[in-house]
Length: 119
Image 1 (cartoon, one colour):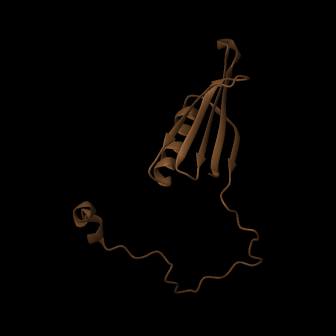
Image 2: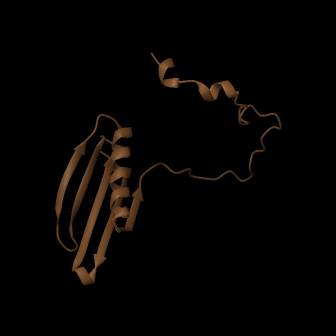
Image 3: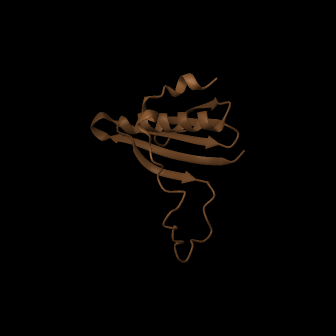
């Protein structure tokens, strides 16, 4: 099991005597480990199991969004996603008539109910 992404959030408000942390770790085995509690304690934890990495990442992002929305601040973020070892020295120019250019959108495409086309 490899740690794909982790975040540590903290919420401190001395006037309310609130000193909390919240941590989440997304793992390669489609699990999401969450730990929370008062700063300087072990806290509590829960492991969420998912059928695929996409669902695990969606839950990770949702929980982080909820906590930051409540005033938690990001203290530390780590990601073990592979990073390119080197950057190209000079950018590769795109051809003038590249097939990667934005496609023209036919107005009829905007009125299609794409859900009915899937079977």
